[in-house]
Length: 365
Image (cartoon, rainbow, N blue to C red; front, side, top):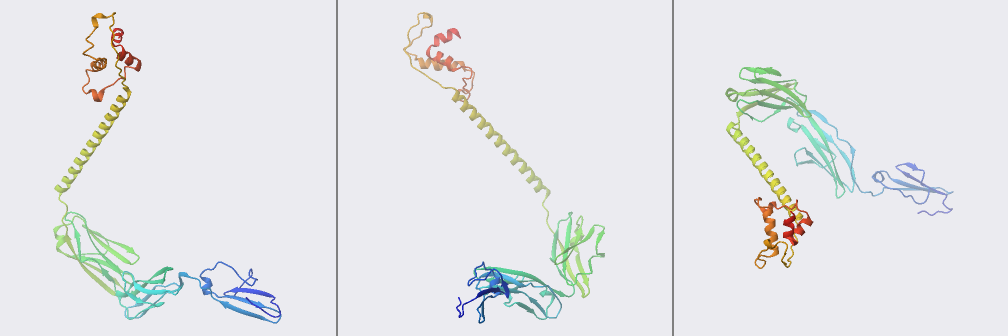
């Protein structure tokens, strides 16, 4: 807020030295970002006598932002190397340098200094910035060290007799290797195929991989050493590799596993089919029993004069018993009445007639 005598004639706002045309009042409202922390905002007020200007930085909290990207560096063995990485952030950030794959902090400043580097120093380095409770940022940068090829490989590699074996070595160097060769017994091969042996190369971001493939591995292949040698302008590098026999899975075991798996599959399908059969049979029984809506009534038997020869001893046999006997006799060929009982051929009216007047039903049947 400003006061003046004579009266104030106007206001002018700027950010980072650039006039904000839309801001001409005593206050300025806007949505801030990290640039308000790095570029000061100024307000100029004037009257007929003169003008006054004040500026300030806005305390904006923001995660790390890269200011200077790190660039790959190349140096010779024995020389010094410097890697640079600049960040900004608010509140003040913490910066660390580490080699990729290691937790050892090498520096806490914007620059990493490495003295009298060797080929072991070559590789990727990580520059990480941390703003507490706000965010984290990181960048990777590669240091190349000129020198003879550095070959990394397992000293013992494995193959199965009679199968296809491979022996490989990885060459990482600056500059890249000009030549890579394999030597064993009296044989020598840089690339291509010779007898049972083939040499191939593949390039990666970090070097070259050379692979010696051996077809139909024999006993003699396990009794020799394989020499992988690479050359560049700074000299050669060499690695010696042994091929070790690995026990294969016996044919008998493979056959046994195959047969067992087949038996298990058959058993599984057998259980599955049995389950479907039982489920279908249960559903059939349920439908049959629902169709059979049995209604049994006990009625007083009155003598029927029209059929005196069919009269029975009603004192010893009830109506319900005679009904059930009639039902059982009509299905006497069924093995299991509880499961296969059906009334599909007898409708409700016939059944009611049979229950209430069995003699009349039998006469007209």
